[in-house]
Length: 493
Image (cartoon, rainbow, N blue to C red; front, side, top):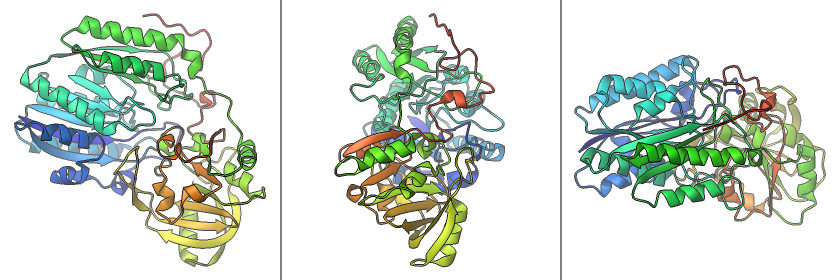
């Protein structure tokens, strides 16, 4: 059984005007051929593909390309076309195939194509035909389009937020493909799109609004008939097919698949108000709350400027609050600012420096802040994420400088990176466990690594391209009416 595998993964924030370019993909190393097997055996969905194949003596994996970029703005045309055509060429180079297995994000947009995944899958079908089994894994925040649904044999999405089941998702997708190729199952799919895009507290841990639906999905997938069931909450892309989706894959039972997808959708719609964001603290309030708590670390989640959601990562709101407050202990935070990094490198380690940081990429209510401090460390910005979310992924934030401003350590980088993981701070010699305040550029994913040792977590309501205030964004292409942007939105299955 000859199975081609590959990966094209980038999450687009349509409201971040900084484009995703080939540099962003090269920063995370584009891999080809056997490099994928040797470097991704235990990493993410590709690792799941590999583990599943290792259990099948008759499966030969034919690796093509792995291209990842950290979430950011819309991909430029040249980068999109290069990656699309290179993946197609690598597929051609594999020769005869029995199946195709791809790891995709599901919410990647380019200037020339709002539905990058659907466009790619359509091109694969056009060249390899309608009958070859084609199974994909998707991120939890994928935006499911009609082209995706009509192109794939089956799809599987993450079942957790924070995303700690990436390897398991790939494993599940691979097993579905192998069984399909053998003819032991016949996947059939049902899907329902909801007219809603709330970006509230969507954790799938107990007590959060999505948790009951993932509990239901776990029960469904224990049956013999249901191969996969998924919920896809999406908000920050801007496309004519925007909206949450439910997708169920069954073994040769399309009516059951559609019925279950509809049931999940009805349940979500009935609870739609629970998915609206709760009251969040302003940057000033968050800092004051943190300092009123004994001990630490206190985690301040800067969700609106979350690089994990595709925001720029250059908000100065929390930094401003910290600079005007006296406190004991240390504070750690990150800012994306290539100009400031260059200035720090120019003066060198241990030099005193005065510079304006942040506020150069996202300028609305986000002015640069002038700081005076010492350059403590300069690095290449490369490190490996320790997890559990994205464990084993090699990150690259570009050249990075640590500036000490009193008891505040500012990690300034050229490009955004994994704000959810403590390895970001540890890679520059800082230990989050020892700090009083730690700022993370992540809305939810940070919980997987930080929750076990955080004294308290505070979600911060600041400026940024990943704000939960969706009404502040100018959606140009989204279907209307849509909840919560419009009043009196109706939904009927």
